Image 1 (cartoon, rainbow, N blue to C red):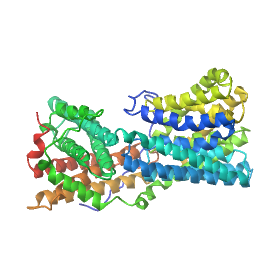
Image 2 (tube, rainbow, N blue to C red):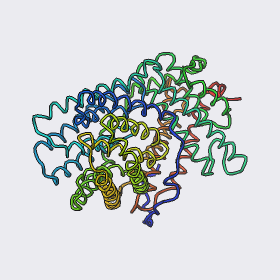
Image 3 (tube, helix red, strand yellow):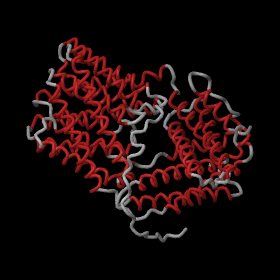
Image 4 (cartoon, helix red, strand yellow):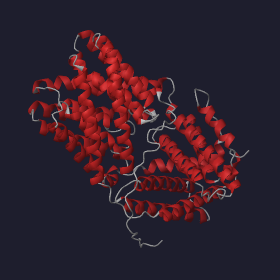
Length: 565
């Protein structure tokens, strides 16, 4: 492997897309879980405050209640830990915000603290990979808390309300495990099987049309996308199973199914996609997990045990690449807040939150999110105008409208961000009225201005602070793939590899290939970059998948028996 790295010539600024930005996707297969969870987690505290006549305290209970939006994709053992950390992180953010609000009324200081908190939220969310809805919920709550009138003596009581609601949200998030304890792992395994079946079909189509090369060399864009999607789904299934903790027989049966998906991904020509989809269908609902012969899978499951024992990569090793995103978040949020203040808008934190919500993996995706945010917020303001008369009938109507918009936001946001924003916007406007009804026209005007300010200023900050080391990250990912490929190749060539070593090497290589594809996709949408080594990426992916197929052959023919027709 050569250590020399070429330095390609600069490339022009990449085009910003408009086509497809507002296109609707298929809804998530578990859209109803966060939607129902947030309604229960928010509804009980809010209705309790309504009964007590203290709806003005709802901001603090919302801080804990909205934690129920997180970790729905994780196994319950991992979900319990993740939700606990989410609640603690929310309490820490709110504590900083409330203490700051109680010590100063300077809007300039409040905006600066809000921007720093937003950068911290972005960094921690990215390094822990907590997933949807990401840092924006933390930033929304902490920014609103910064601008809520506060005295130092009120802070402990308000934090206690947030903690109590957070504990309730934890219970809501964990409750489904009583009925379906292996549900998240089953869904992750089903996604891997379905995605692999789609890749097998795409591979066969590419081979028949002459654009692909069977198991290894499909060059058609559809074939490549299907392979990348299937690789990511298989990797995600392994991550879910590895995070699940104890390994009773149902979970071991799921591991054997993911092994079959992994084998099919490496050798699609020898795979029956209908068999994979049949297994995936059996994993829906509460049917028993399809059982494969345990004796056939002893080697690959030993590889799972080796991977569990090896542990995870330290979080500190992922901090370096996140610095540009933290800088652009802090700069964009601060500038958005200050521009909003200069324009005389009464709630500059709305502009700050809008800027924070934009930042994605690269400039192009940030642009797309900005367009979606503006469209969704403007339509949402019009929806608020229609709903305001109903919400103003009384506090109970206000609470019920907010709950309806909570459900709608989570039900729609997986279709496209702008569609979910149509419900998020009126919900945010109604929350401001928990302390008293306000004149709708002023609220709507402030929201539209802050949305435009946050979107424009936030995107300018993203352009100014680009990820100029994205090309270096690709080089590092290429090196990781090459090291993993060479390691797997040595084990394949070994006369008597250690038990489980081949499967462990195969998963290491598969994970490196998934990381390479994600890194290349992120770098492809970044501005002000030198030309990316696309040919080297394609070559690394092809040789990597050839080696994956070789690891399958190295395990022997029994691994293919259950995926053949």
